[in-house]
Length: 375
Image 1 (cartoon, rainbow, N blue to C red):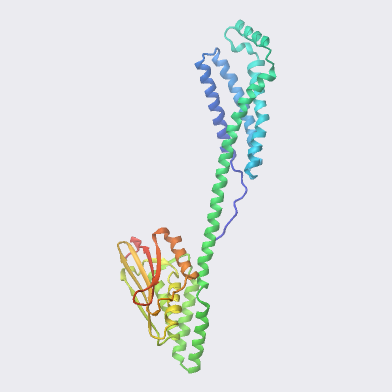
Image 2: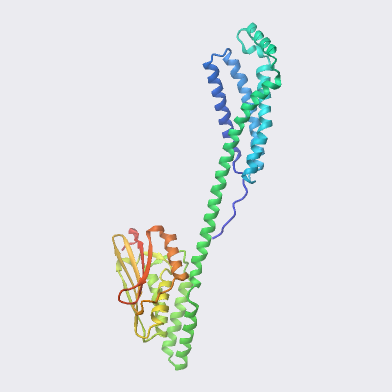
């Protein structure tokens, strides 16, 4: 599985930025127009025209603010926040100057239906001593917080996208690690198994037991060809999985001709039910390693599968342990089985293991049955 690092694309595209900017300013213009209508300001048409002009200027300057913030997209969040607060200030003053010019410098009397009243209003403003800088500063403060509100939306959307990218990257890496772990299962067949098998084969050759040696070579070849060519990420039928384990047990039977007995009991309707490839291998290996090899008497290793109420129960057990102090280990094999079941079935599957009351050891896998797979 290939894992790629997300490219450093902008956190917000031009289209989204444009829509948010237009949405903010249109909403602002509508609110101001509604206020003017409620207060019954004169010359609503003239005011609306000038308000549109200021709104367009505001959109343009907010776009410049967006381009500035976009340049700092992949910087630490603190840097982006500081940039937003700093860059919004000159934009707010520029918008305030545009607003002051449109409403106070460019033919201000025209916004009054009564021209004489308009001139008197201008005279009153002059007598109050309010200069342009004071009025611009007052407007700039409100526009500054308006721009900060938009910048906060931009930063929030960008941060949310970064979180999603990080989650996707983590998921891809986790999946890649899991896939690598599952694929490594094909190489986790106990190395001692091959070593012991070759020793047994050597003994058969020395004894001149040609038939058994030939059978063992054939079984060994078939087992490795099947196990190494199958993909642990894929699923196989239960019949195919059990057949592979029978080949493995057949090889081990040559090593333990007097001690190893096998029993296979698979419900016919489960033959085509699909299971993760090699899911039983670690369980059968443990039965041989801890149950058969440590025993001095015949030991039966059994594989059984039954169905009940939409669930399939697969049991791998042996009757080789007489001592209650012995365990079948908690190594990578069993952990791998449990992890693979969780990856494939989530909480719907389980692996339990432990000593049997009458001696021996049992590992039980419970997984849901797919109705379409039932015969």
